[in-house]
Image (cartoon, rainbow, N blue to C red; front, top):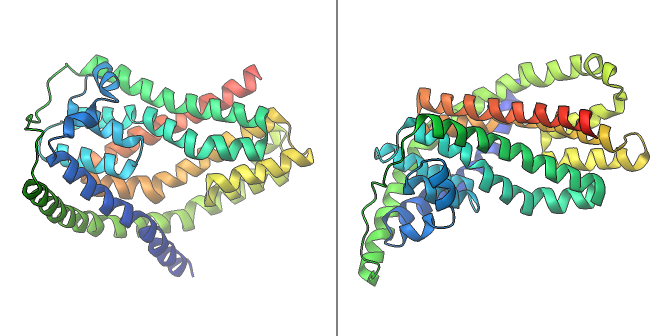
Length: 316
């Protein structure tokens, strides 16, 4: 039964992930070949300069504001073409948490948290959520300042006057490269998702259910708070709705609600590391580098969540 569940989950996750990845590769390849590439670097040029990253990474940082899959595709293509090295790639992924955090705040955290938790608790959650993202990016910038030397982009500046014929070539080559890259990604992505789902079904969720009550008793949470953590396995939105319900019922106060939400966030992103992080990064960046990116990225994300819990506990 678990094999069947893992297989169904693999199909469902693949249906969600693969179309944005294909679109992301197409956009990344067209943008990279476009004479207007340098304009995409302008909105985050200051951020790339602080982190000592070239224009290829700056363009990806801008794409993180809109489409994370396109940003990762652009980084993957730049790394494959040796325009950026391993360290620059890892730093770009970490620094990308600033634009990703802003995107998540405007599209998800702000509207959902304020409506479900109310202006006070919801506003605090949004602030801590954004602070956690800035912490990860800050570590990336600090590492870049210590390890990277500033260097110029390897992208050549082209003529900005592009004819219809040139655009046809750009679109055709972009589509060809997109199909080639997407097939390679999918071959790695789908089996990795399946293996990750098996690990989640056999180990993670069962372990959480068995150990949860013993873990929360010293913190003073009721057993009903298990609903929030189990909801976070499905999605962060479900965890927000569940915690909002407990908050309105009086089962949680503001502090315990925020702590529980970041515990849920810790769980959600931890499972997301296996469910999406490892498959995506291994398929984008291949083998050991993909695993290194995942390990560094998700370790810092979880450290940020723990720090937010401590801050809430100590200062609120």
